[in-house]
Amino acid sequence: MPKEGRAFASMTGQCEAMNGLVPESMEGLVIAHLGQGIAVEHENKIILCQTLRKLETVAVGDKVLWSLSAPDQGRIEAILPRRSLLARPARNNKVRPVAANIDTVFVVIAVEPYCDFLLIDQYLAVCENNEINAALILNKTDLTLPEALENELQVYQNLGYQIHRVSTKIENGLAELKLALHNQVSLLTGQSGVGKSSITNIIVPDKNLKTNTLSETTKHGRHTTTAATLYHINTGGDLIDSPGVAIFGLADLNRQQLAQGYREFQPFSDVCQFNDCSHHLDKGCAVRVAAEDGKIAMTRYQRFLKLTQKMSR
Image (cartoon, rainbow, N blue to C red; front, side):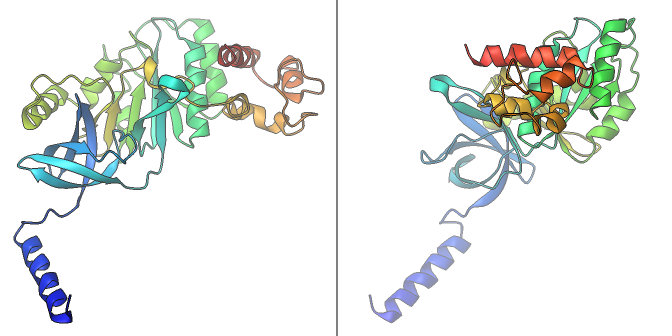
């Protein structure tokens, strides 16, 4: 094509783009998966988008580039770089991204039902390996706290994990929790029955309104998310509400990474006799000796062994 023709084509393309005839990429935030579509927020509007086939799975919390493909419909063209990512086990020994760009995972536990500490350790190990901050929320503190639970909580506190003690029933400790959530992206997770939904409804009082708006805007009808959903907190920050236990699994952690997820192991694992020490019955295992000597909480060490057995099945 002659030089003049190329210049004319370039000018024509620019004019078409200015007139809105050529779709331009815009930045958006993924807030939910809705059926086969993905809800993307852009300038306080929600667009139901599809993804290009070549893209990897998009996660809630992802920042993406998208363009209009039809009125009120879009196409995700690229996933912008993530600062963090949580995944869950998927079929064929693969993992599926669930939530991205998280600053802190808050594991909700309660006085009742009794804590599944094995699950808590699993959550914390995944966070440690993904360099995501983790903290605990103890709910239902209006009930009598068993001594055994308090002892276990002290172990986590000694390891540097922050514990927020709240009661949604008498609304105790919630102001402090809101401050901890301020101006960051947080994810709530935990076993069923601990009051996670009650906490979410207090932090995001217009959650139901936002959920209904999501359904209406995307014309998806009833809002039936099977994964995480992101809500904006009125006082600043975002909250990702996860479906709970199934979100994590041990993802793709191997035994060595699981051990790295126990922060108290590190000073001792560095001096184990063998680099590939399983920290079980291996000769010269400094981690096992530390647990036997009380330098590592025996309960945490025993749960580590249970998780390694779980991984080998």
